[in-house]
Image (cartoon, rainbow, N blue to C red; front, side, top):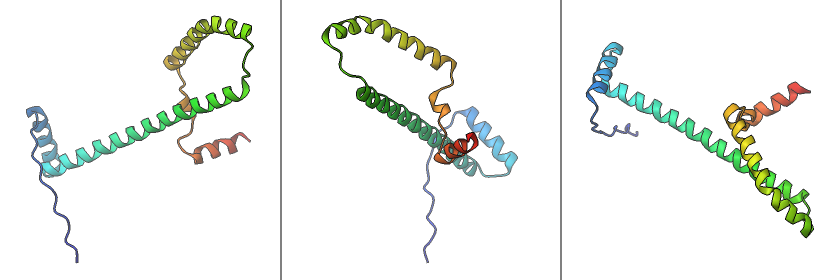
Length: 132
């Protein structure tokens, strides 16, 4: 029969105001301070884990979006003859500035692309079924 694992001990130094708040909260809940502190740490770690997962998802969306765009652009854009290529390079700066301005407006006003993409495939399939 396996014995339950013993919890590891850790010493921390808390700001006096934090300690006072922790002590008062533990007293109101009639629970020991270490139990309250452990629960608070676990909750905070769970929040950080969810934020990290969303960040990883958002970065993945950005990378995939860029990759799809580049693949599409390369597949559909034929090379220009030299006189036209020179004219295109001349306009590139203005077109880039316009792109950056449009991107800035989109980022400041929303909605963001990541908000338009469902969290999981089940949401996407349900949304598609509702539209048909």
